[in-house]
Length: 364
Image 1 (cartoon, rainbow, N blue to C red):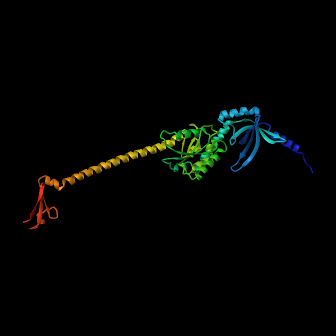
Image 2 (cartoon, rainbow, N blue to C red):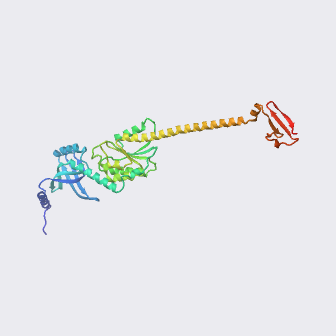
Image 3 (tube, one colour):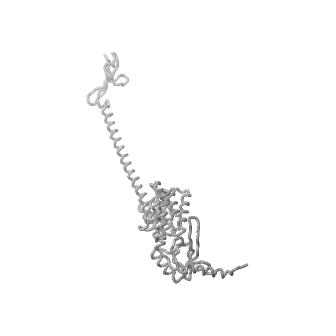
């Protein structure tokens, strides 16, 4: 039986790889995992996936003498660090070790490619959402005229969340709100699912929430790329509660903003949104109360005028007023006023009333 030593096999594989890839080449892959070691080296797991699973995976390393330069250039171009979940284009040297197997030694990373991939993925997500008819789904909902119960999705220690709570609770009108935080990861590869879980938790509770607020302060384009995630945007679009977003700065607009019921740029502006809504309703109620009071007073005035007129008429028809003017009244024995002579009979007893008394008479 013929056989070959393992070291021989490994050496032949190494020689074959080096013959096939004698020079460095640009490799497109997703950063599945990244670790920064205390010795200054950076280790990665690079992967490629299709719609259902990982189809390729390899370990990679950036040696200390190159890592600081690569990392700094990447940060300057993108505004953020190299992190898991992003797609990179890396200039790599194929390496094979008889002990550790296949790996890539990364010599450079093109940051503009990563930005371009994120923008390309954003366009694809938009197209899918439009095809699914979800872009306007939230607009079919109706905002509460008096929002009180507000569910907030944010990082617990986020400065934006603190600014929102302070601005909301210290409003000049003294309006009260019930605010509850549903903590979530707000950046990175795990952020979309974390926010989806928070949305599901909000919908499954017994509290009748008037609005869901998703908020995060500013960050780099890559930090905020999670807000273009297809799954997160579906969860926002199909939420039965109006979703408000406050993500990033003025220069940033994300798909999560586009599918939300309403979006503003900062958490403080979001607080103003609800304060202004309640203030407008309060003003409308005050105006209605004023109009109701005026209408009530006008109605009372009309009733008072009608009553005065009625009293005047009653007073004018008072028999005593007739006697005061020098006239007299004739009544029968039962005190009924006799208006017609035809109503009297001979021998009937009648009374003639004057201002200063009455006389009894008999009809002849």
